[in-house]
Image 1 (cartoon, rainbow, N blue to C red):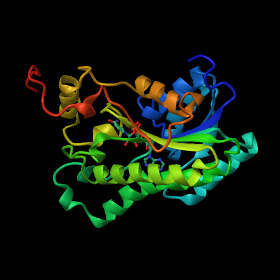
Image 2 (cartoon, helix red, strand yellow):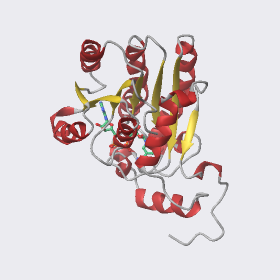
Image 3 (spheres, helix red, strand yellow):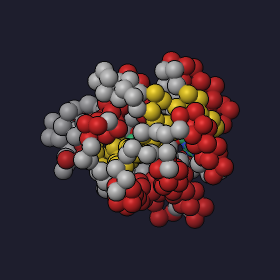
Image 4 (cartoon, rainbow, N blue to C red):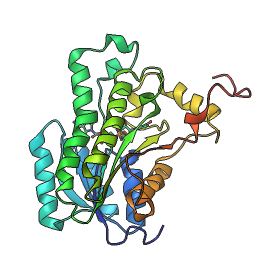
Length: 264
Ligand code: NAD
């Protein structure tokens, strides 16, 4: 992919550490020649993100907590100053109270429902609206989703409802900004052991289940999601928009447990 992203600049939100999906995407973009800006959420994560940003010569664009609109504005104002325009934006952010990522969806609280939707869905809309202003020659916007949006997955609960809304918002925004040559897509990634992933109840069981039952008989990696992102962020996909592309070892096509799958 050397040179595929040469001359392109973009911002990636959602790196927490070197296991983050956003980090897999950042590495792939950098290796393909893109210039990257990263954000962090709070001082604790800044310490983690700073050395990673240095590895990629990435711009440390600022603290961004999506529940605080001023922090989104500050980051984009900084980018405007440094770069003037951008070519892509990656949103790899989600949150739900851990207590509600186990048990029954029906028991979700009003507070956590609203918070999960705000951080995991609305934030992509807010970020896309701000990013659009800086995409003068078209662009590509990308978010991360999960199969729990389409089918009921154990413990995914309110996050599944949020991801369904996120996928719908990808389609609506694709129409809103398509006339300006801006594309909006999502990657539906298979389960990966990250900070956010580990908050889901019985996550190890889910990982094993996917490994044994996906067509490729293994789990996917952040580097593979990074390469899939490269396709959607680059000019290889200029007619692809409003799409949810699965990077999940093919798990989403499977109808039942594999006959030869071992017991977990
Ligand atoms: P991660 O914990 O590495 O990343 C989640 C990020 O969200 C963190 O960087 C965190 O700082 C950020 N975040 C949370 N609340 C925020 C807020 N209020 N403001 C700003 N940032 C905030 O985990 P990850 O698995 O890499 O998650 C990235 C995305 O991928 C999420 O949307 C997640 O739902 C999605 N995803 C993950 C998996 C998986 O199995 N890990 C599978 C499919 C989709």
